[in-house]
View 1 (cartoon, rainbow, N blue to C red):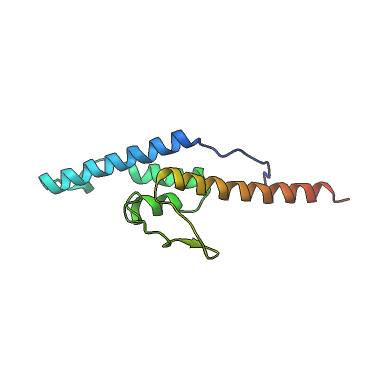
View 2 (cartoon, rainbow, N blue to C red):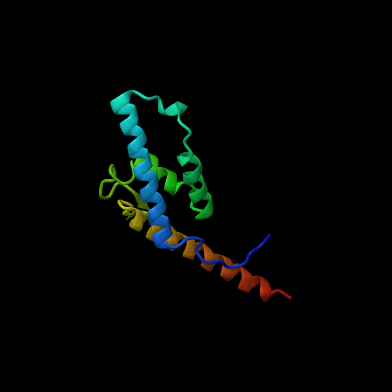
Length: 123
């Protein structure tokens, strides 16, 4: 198993740009569906795969999916609706989602470092 410590794999500008493009594309598809009755299930649609890729890339589980689909790209976020260990988490914008993901990533990397340091001290 590779226990090397890694930097967060995407910078904030890239992450926010991708999320905003996904949101823009989703709104366009919904507009086609609403105004013209075009069945979006028949349109080539890679957004789900991109969201899943971001979930995997950020090793966050499914926070990106949750933000995009359950929170409708932050539109359905309500203050205090998300807590971790009774601490409110604000992911109302792509920037705030990114900050939360990076903080979680850093905690995981610190734990990896702690285990790596511990393993080095073994006889």
